[in-house]
Image (cartoon, rainbow, N blue to C red; front, side, top):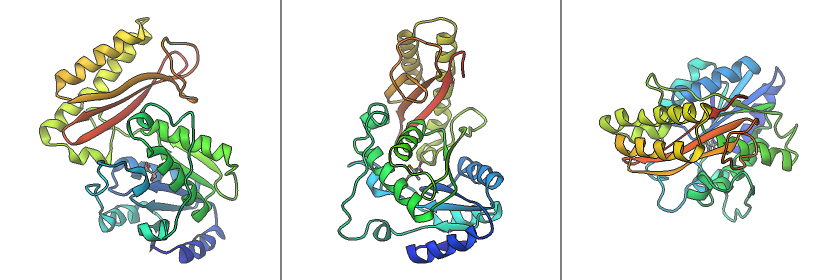
Length: 286
Ligand code: PAF
């Protein structure tokens, strides 16, 4: 497994890999967990070579967010990736990704508005910008993203369609279902911020979401189900709810009732130092 920090050697190394098969890209910010390793395993089923990028992208962190505290553990991450058959780790420094004078921003309207885009201003501009750069740097045949960041996946798909980022920039964009702990909590690098008590309480998030979904699918109205969800989270020890919304699965258009189109319940809530997000399919077409 090669670990590369500069763009020129990256391009040569990926070109060499491409001689002997497809290349899949798994973009990450490091602090890898089983969810990321699942993406790598899925990528290996689909491509001969897997490139994992590890870059804590400053442009997607807002003022007062956890950029400085975000865990950075390149050696430990590489030790997890090597046994999974990763061919290459692309780990640029911020100055390599955004050299002095860097001035370009990609902004995707519509799907990036509201939900995490409402609470984290500029966040999805930062995500779209770095992912577009990663696609052009690696030129993968496919890129895999976790469905846990459902809105992020929708933003990246929209950007790829709008900017014609088909081959050679990126082939398929593949969403991989969320990996969960035994108690249902979605795996996230930010779970590391939780104390033992908070970690136990955090299991209320997927539980309250499943209860809300059961109520909505059982014919109950959406708004009261979401109020009950918020009450359950606050009772369990969450400090606050950023949002809990039912949305159309692909366009992320708002839904006040369950229709025949695929729908998604998306939630962000704060507990201790962590802001946890999750989403689940809702409805007959899921
Ligand atoms: O999901 C993440 O880890 C990041 O948002 C991504 C896609 C690697 C871009 O920095």
